Image (cartoon, rainbow, N blue to C red):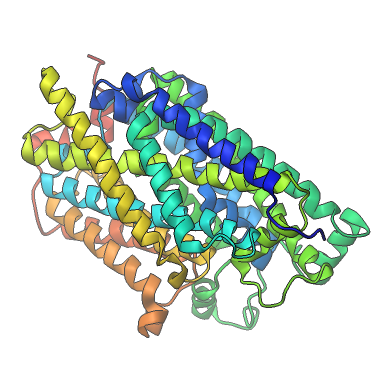
Length: 529
């Protein structure tokens, strides 16, 4: 291992990258003339920035650190999560993307008003905003934690969090969606370069190289593609189900839960939907998603092998035994990677965070403007509806920028407390993804059930959210009967939302004829206007 940690050369590379992105946001500042430009890039983007922006938004520094930590802990079994991409692909490309393009929405949640009611729309949008706030807090925390580790604490965690939050918030407020998307393209290339270099170094950093790393991993049981569940073979049918639910990682939980998560992300997460809506055509959005799918599969393979290999490297190079699992990869970056490459990796982690934070803030602002300000103050269903005066355009753009600054401040403060929630892998899988299930469930009810009613969907979505929250905090609150593995809350809350929604619809509420015109089949049967 080398000594010296984060050198001057590393710092120059990392900071040059970050300030280059800030400069790009400043360059595009005066090109934003309306909220349509600020939030949707004028709906003019081609397939390539759409695809790479989808990837950069979804991966973030959380994935960059959490997935290696997960595969370090559980082994190569984590590759099964890649199955979520081929499973979700037809749902996204052939059902949801054309549906949103047909409706010409600004936010996904405005659809729920047409199908159900303003209350369901507001609930879904509020859940989304809370979801993104928790997610963005972790996004700010992760690169700050990495920088603190690679500099051996010479750059303290909290000041780093404040700087990271301030820089990204200002960049988003200046450049809007177009700056976010083109920055995401750059971030994606830097991120992949860093990951490829990391994989090579992980598998060649100890004497004996790949063969020695592999032998150590086999001996540790990290090459198993199935989970080792204690007592599973002798358990009865219902006990086996219970064991699957309480075990953190199994093939079943990885495939089912990641499929629900990815479909929830790609189909009803405004950060994703907003990116599709920037496409200049349906074809551009579809091709962009295909680009994202291929890139995401490569991403999964790379991050899994980084963490998987680090288990052997950490044991052979005698990493400190008291290192938290989140700090293993940052320690490797600081003490094993060559000078200059360390700076590139820090830039990649910061870039991944900035891209996701830009998209998260921008999409949350879209939800605030369209689903709350527009609906309750302006009394319009959609911000693009009707003629808009130049004065009103300027006013909305000003509100968007101020909202960006407020949200950035809130998540920066929240980032200071992320460490208290446990390791990043568990945080990302349980707390962040608990919002996915109920949101996705409400949309499936709306689009594919003629029987589903507004009050039933409202109650089901709320109860799904409560159930997900209880499962996430069950161990902390001593509710052992609701304690499940880290991956399960999103999937269980999704199915619970569907079941409760269908059941309650038999007893409460009634659909108007106009509401039933907004099922998926009815919307897709319309001729384009």
